[in-house]
Amino acid sequence: MTDQNSYEDIRDAVRALCAEFPAEYFRKIDEERGYPAKFVDALTQAGWLAALIPQEYGGSGLGLTEASVIMEEINRAGGNSGACHGQMYNMGTVLRHGSEAQKQLYLPQIASGALRLQSMAVTEPTTGTDTTKITTTAVRKGDRYVVNGQKVWISRVQHSDLMILLARTTPLAEVTKKSEGMSIFIVDLREAIGKGLTVQPILNMVNHETNELFFENLEIPVENLIGEEGKGFKYILDGLNAERTLIAAECIGDGYWFIDKVTKYVNERVVFGRPIGQNQGVQFPIAKAYVNLEAANLMRYKACELFDAHQPCGTQANMAKMLAADASWEAANACLQFHGGFGFACEYDVERKFRETRLYQVAPISTNLILSYVAEHVLGMPRSF
Ligand SMILES: Cc1cc2nc3c(=O)[nH]c(=O)nc-3n(C[C@H](O)[C@H](O)[C@H](O)COP(=O)(O)OP(=O)(O)OC[C@H]3O[C@@H](n4cnc5c(N)ncnc54)[C@H](O)[C@@H]3O)c2cc1C
Image (cartoon, rainbow, N blue to C red; front, side):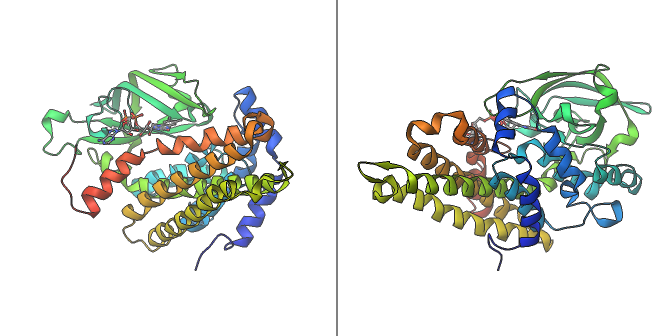
């Protein structure tokens, strides 16, 4: 039975690394709207971001369960895995669908940190969640694909060497199924930026390094196509279970951070001659958030176990992500509320973590889309869109 005390060796080691980057570090980065480069470097050098890369390609070959513990501990320590989680799971597309030559070329360098594959470009401004309608095209011309179009909310581009790109290779009107005709490419950002790819940062609420991308006749060598042309949508879906589950674990880490922080505070803060935590009106919302967090954690481990056993886990991964995002948001609200005015002061870190965890109601998939997946695919109700 896995629970929050399992995997103590991993937890202790990640906690020790995180202890070198205390709250002040992340607060300063947030104030400066900077990127925690030193922290991400330290995680990379210690091998944590290569957890899911098999040993034969230079990684540590751990399961999703262990990888999720790493992400959880970062957020539980007060950091934000959102700055670096892409390096852990984006390589899965190469691992699962790349040729042996591509794996040999990229995976050992990703494992060592020599190459950063932190970005994945799927979302577009005009199509949003309706991914099969994407309008970015890649047209084959000899030994190249020529890419034109636009993406939005593409994260960590300025801290990546490589990016996974989803583009349409066959027009929507010419495919029998709308999920066909899209392909996945590895874009070498070091060559692409300024030569067909323009990157425009988006200033946002969570200090997340994210960008709008403009493709104008960007040329990509054909050998950068991953897997078969036209199968890209399926390949992207294959990677989502790991992404959803890791983000669930990050939300769990956030949730414990909020619960620990607020529990300590309400025990110490004295108003009306007694600790505010003595009031049931204060206790119950915190206790309820904790109960929901523990329940979400069970679904997170269920998703991990199925994934690691190579069993279908789409339903559990999505449910874990939703339950964990809801529980961390509930804990965030309680934490902010019972810090009173101090919750709004940056030096308490509550408002920063509150903003950070709110993202996961929307990205990488909104709660509504998870509910519609469960309604349709688990419960057999009619497709709503
Ligand atoms: C900080 C940040 C980082 C991101 N990083 C990346 C990245 O690295 N790569 C990438 O490709 N994308 C990234 N995204 C994009 C993210 O995945 C999308 O924002 C998300 O999937 C929602 O898409 P959208 O914003 O287009 O919302 P829309 O599709 O416009 O939907 C808006 C809202 O409408 C509701 N909705 C939409 N359709 C339905 C429906 N059929 N039924 C019920 N409700 C519905 C949902 O509540 C949804 O939240 C990032 C976003 C943010 C904010």
